[in-house]
Every structure is written in structure tokens, then in C-alpha cells.
Image 1 (cartoon, rainbow, N blue to C red):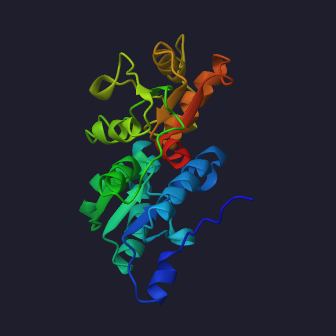
Image 2 (cartoon, rainbow, N blue to C red):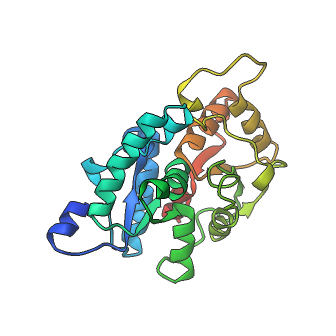
Image 3 (tube, rainbow, N blue to C red):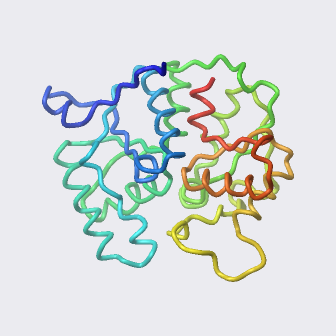
Length: 260
């Protein structure tokens, strides 16, 4: 029997005339992709554990428009963005937390010019905050002695210069953190960014996610940690390609912390 997760909606808060501390932006991957749903659940488990007053938009949440923009359809992006901004502003949302760096980057950097101004936080930054303020404590036994390498998501790292939060959070698991030779500002993309997730790779002698997985395998990890649902898919595919899925796990930081 799994524990009951509490996931209130903004509409429910509004009906009671209350405001949550944060709005959890689930994102398309976290809503529909079976693997990414596990990341969503792990993060909700953390929020429940830390007694965070949060809400989701539920059926009122729509795609951020990031994919349309990256694929060059500015018109569709603006339509999708405006729709979301109307909903967010009607609820007077101030602070948004998301597990998806693409949503994070889009709402943080591209919504303000369309009238959507929010304090946008990536889930690794928020987990770090919860640990620092003492709202979340880890036992730190689950991953003691394990080797973990962290793959920087492009839209968190190089696009928004956040390299420390995920690493600071991972250190709390008591695992040994091993860096790939390409990491932080020199990290290699997993191959899914910029709407590449939904098209076949161009001609070449190797798919980029296979190359990135090789970087990770060189660190001899037990676990490859990710902070993005798309990176998670790409690295998982890379591990399957190398037939190492029985030995190496690909886990989002939220899952690592929820298990701790």
C-alpha cells in the first residue's frame, strides 16, 4: 500500500480564500510521461514530508510553449504563454517551483516580457532551501558509499548558471560525488533540448545521448543523477544501449532525496 500523496489545486485554495507558499508547475513530461511521473511523485512526497503548503494548477496547467518557441513557432509560443499567464495572474501566483528546467527557463526568462512576473525556482534549489531551513532532514544512509555522477541539464546549468544547488543537495545523501570530465559550464547536452526530443537525430556516427552516457560511465558510477525529465530519458536510453541497466540506475535528484 503506497502512502497517500496530498496534491491540492489552486482552485481549492482559492475557494478557501487562501494562498499556498508555492505553485508546483508539473510540466508536460511530469504529467504524461510514465517515467517522469515518478519524479513528480517523489517531489510531492518531499513537499508533503516538509509540510510545504503547495498547490498545482491541475487541468488548468497547459504546456509552457517552450517547445513551440525552440522549434521556431513564436506565434504558438505566445498563445500558450498568454493562456498560462492569464491563469497564473488570476490566482495571484508569486512563487513557482518546477522539476523541469525547460519550464523553469521559459517561465523565468521568457514570460516577463508577456506580463508574467514570478519568482521561479528549480526543484533542486527548493530542496536545498528546505534542507538549509531545517524543514527537511535526511537520514543519509540509503546512498552511503555509492558513487553518484551528476549530469548538468543545459537549461539549468549553462542557460541559468545554477551548478551548486544540485550538487549541494546530492552531498547530503552521503554518497561520493564523482564529476564527469565535462561538467558544469563545459557539460555536454543530453541531446533532448531545444525540441530535439521529438525528432530523429541527424546523420553522424553516434547519437549525442550515447556520447554523454559514455562520459558518465567513465566515472564508474552506481547512479547517474539528473535534474530534468528529458535528461533522465536520454541517459536511461544510453544505459540501455550499453546494456548496463541492471548495474547502473538513472535517478532524478528528487527521487534520491525522497528515498533518503
